Structures are given as structure tokens and as C-alpha cells.
Image (cartoon, rainbow, N blue to C red; front, side):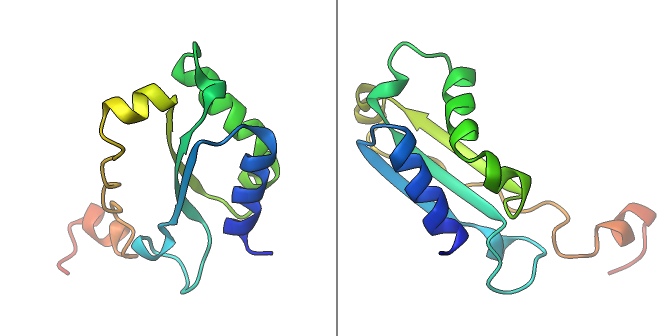
Length: 114
């Protein structure tokens, strides 16, 4: 089972899911090809009703504790109730580009020409 499949399965087992989008953003970072280290999760769940953002994040991190200890380096979470999701039109912003992920961050920090 891939890391992405494990993430989706565990989230679906842990929370009632109205909508789920999982994007592997690893290709946007300085990692080997076909890596599964950086993900963006958009999750809409009734379980988030009345919860502050930190509680929502804790629920997801609890479900994904094993992945967060191992293969997953970064997980961008976008967590909504169904009403919040509808109110914003069912869309989230794109993740920012990786900063320094091209392997030359240390060169830039030293002022070395690229």
C-alpha cells in the first residue's frame, strides 16, 4: 500500500468524510522522484463541527501518527465542516512553492552565484 493510500484509508477510518482530496506534492520539493513525503489534505467532515482548528488538526495527526513519524515530512491540512466548505465555494488555495527545495539553499545563503 502506498503512503497516499494509507493516509486516505486511515483518515476515512477515523473520521466521517463528506469530501476528501489528497495531493502528493513531493514533486515540488528536493526529494527523489516518486517520493511520498509531502502531502496536501483537504478534508470536509461533520466531526469538525464546533471544533477549533487546533482540535481538527490533532484529530488528523492522531489518525496519521505512524505516517508522521516516518515517511511523511510535511502535511498541509485544510479542514472544514460541510457548511464552511460550501461557504468558500469548495476550493482551497494552492500550496506555496518550496523555498530552497532545489538543493541550492546553502549556496544562496552563502551568496554563491547560481
